[in-house]
Length: 301
View (cartoon, rainbow, N blue to C red):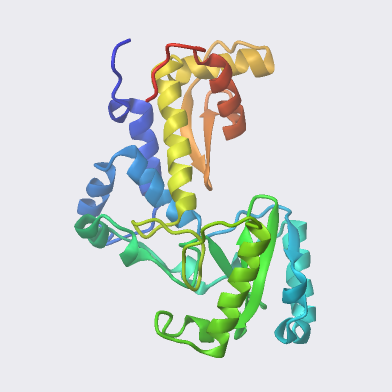
């Protein structure tokens, strides 16, 4: 099979331009734009995903708070505010206004990344760079000193504990009562999730962080997207042929004309056929890749 450099494919170049257009980068000039466009697709997806991870996609989620969280005096004192927030999360409403104001102001610092190859200059330790979100108990512009810290997944939110903003002061040095409370909550959470032992890395704002200063969630997300794009473009006949296979297998139709393009919606990779206004989501892509790949003798991209 002829080697294919996906970076030179028009479909990939179009995706990269779309990602750069979405990323709020500084300085916002042609040099920064050209630098980002010159990065490999995987790096650009990682940067985009790290930024998108700051925001919560509105959709219904179950809410869980362990007994030790609900019995906390701060939780009891703010029970009505928390109940209102929980109802909004469960109803799938947009709760981004409950998060740090930084999600609307932060930008990706191009020069820092160019010089260090890391995300450290763009990190917000109070936000989600390492996987956790912290919720004020009232929506912006109202703020509360009390914050709920939790894990957010596609179908649930798990609150680890309730704290005050004191935990974000002198993170690496403080040994205050609030910091100790935070560490205890993290240990409780780890024991629930890893009852037979496990590894948890991260400080206040917590979660799993890689050596580049972004979350491991973004790393895995990047790997999954690149794997899908590479398989489809190199081993499945390219995006147009693959899209026709999707139509045939999923919709029992064969459109005369297709105009597919790679799109990343929030943090999910999709194929959007502009000619027929049809979207194929990431789960459909993965399923079709599995049945399209040769059983043996294939190469791993």
